[in-house]
Structure formats: C-alpha cells, structure tokens
Length: 403
Image 1 (cartoon, one colour):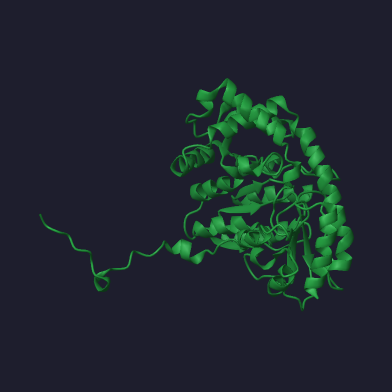
Image 2 (cartoon, helix red, strand yellow):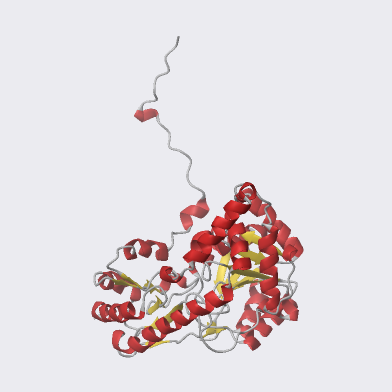
C-alpha cells in the first residue's frame, strides 16, 4: 500500500488570485465604523440603524407565531423565486394606494432592497458599461456597480439633488445604461428631489433611452411637508423605471425583506439572477410580513416611528450650532434618517474621525460617498438611532472631539 507524502513547503504553489473586481472594490467604511459603535458607551451617529426600541416586536412576534401555528409546512418549505403571493398582493395594494397602479405580478420580493440592486446590476450592467449616480451617492450602490465592472460617473447637482440639465449632457456624452437615485430623503444627504425635477429626469430618460433605478427605502418616514410622487409614476418613465422598496426602515431590518417593481422583461431577468443567488427570499419571513400587514396597522406604526424620529431630528438640528465649528453648514431634512453637514474647508472629516471616536461618539465622513472628487469637509449624521437626550450628549462629545 503506497503512502502519499505531503508536498514540501518549497514545492507548494500559490492558489489562484481573487477575482479582479473583488481586489479593486474596498469594503464599506460605514460597516467598519459600526464595529466601533457596537461598544455601548459610544453614541452612534454613524450607522443607518433604525431605533430598536421602536420596533413593533410584539406585533412581529405575533405574526411569526400565527404563521408557524397555522401554516408550518408552507412557512418552512421552499417557495417560488418571485415571492409568496400573499405578500406580493399586499405590496401591490400598498403601492397602488400611493398612486402607482401595481399588480402582484409586477413585483419581485428580494432579500432586502440591497439584493434588488445586485440583481439589477447582474441583469443590466456589462463590464465597462457606464452607470450614472448622484453626487454624493448611497455607498453600497457604489459597491454594487463597482463589483459589476461598471464605469461609475457622478452627475452634478445641488442641495435639491440631480440637475436635469447636467443629466442630459452626461447622457448625450457618455451613453450610460442607467441612472441610480434615492430621490426621497436621500442617503447620505437627507435631501428630496422636487416633483418638477423628477418629471425632468423622466423626460431625459424617455428622449435618450435610459433606465432609472429609483430606490425608496425612506419615503414613508416623512415628518412634515407633502409627499412627492415617485419618478416611476411619471408617464415618460413608466416603461423604464425600476422602483425599489424595503421593510427595513418601517418594520425591521433583520427580516431582510425588500422588493422591486420593474417592466416585465427586466423583472424576468432579475428572477433568473435571483435563482442563481439564493433561489428565493426566506418563506417564513415573507409569510410573517404578509400576516403582519393583514393583522396590524403598519401605517399607524410608521406614523409613531416618524413622530419619534422628528423629535430626534429636531434635537440634532437644535444642537449643531454649538457642536460644529463656526462656518459649518447643515440641512434640515423633512424625513428619513440622515442629515448632511459641511465643516469649514480647512477641516478633513476623515482625518478628524479617530479623535472624535476617542470621545465615544461617531459619524461617517462624507468622502466615501462620492464617485468622483470627494468633498472631505463633509460628514453624514444619523439622527434616529439615539434618543434626544443621548443626541444632546453626543453633540457635546462631538464638539470636544472636533476641537
């Protein structure tokens, strides 16, 4: 009987390298900062984390109990890739009630709206394709498009969002595949794109042949002002807009439930991509969400959450003048989870962060949110995770750290 000897260290060959796309795209600075903010003594203005004390834990638990008691075989079984019919029907009804006629078959349930972005990148983007984004842009979207091998360009804008004239110029010059936008209470800035600009973006897409990916995880968290209709409801964009939604900010992020609404051919391509990714989103979570929508009043719950978040926004806005250096500027969003601050030009928010963290408070520097040239004096502040009292103490610590 032969004995197989181990290969000597000198004869061992290196394993093949990682894919080039994984070597060129870094990790998320936000996720890295969350490791620091996990310490209980740190006041967290960094992560985009909903306030856990505001979760309707009893209502969600009751929904899971009911599903496991009434339909355990279905809840614990495989499901269709498109999503559980009861949940898709409920989502279609909610979307239609908000002014966008939608059938259950228009929707694909995803494992968080982040997966919807990944599926769209797989279905739409070939390596070398040009993708247009806002400036600044949701960080994880930059990661998704970067991993897909896209050439990502930021469209100029202002405090209201993307400039339609600049978009038209970029579309003519660069021939992009899609525009990605978070038009309502944007991450990271908290700004909202006005209705007239939404119509203008839709018209550009219609004239030049462009997909619009409209990400709306925060739209229901409105504290004041009037709701602005989705870009997807503009007649010019009805056949070329993908609308993304999520329960993460209004029900619970741990359920990992999102969805996309897309024209039929693109939706079918996303279904194929999802089959390759995870077959389907967990059945029990989908059924529990559907049961929650049937048995509980989600709109009333969201209204309670938005009321608490409004108090937290007000507490942060009221304290920023004392916390930030003279010459700083910030906005006052009408909803959502974030506000955007700009320090005087001589300040670098990335360089300053370690000193601030030593005072047991954290924010996210603005630089990573830019696809192009970064404004290093900017920072994102999340105002929903902490109570008004903790926000006041956090701003005191922030002031000491920035000194």
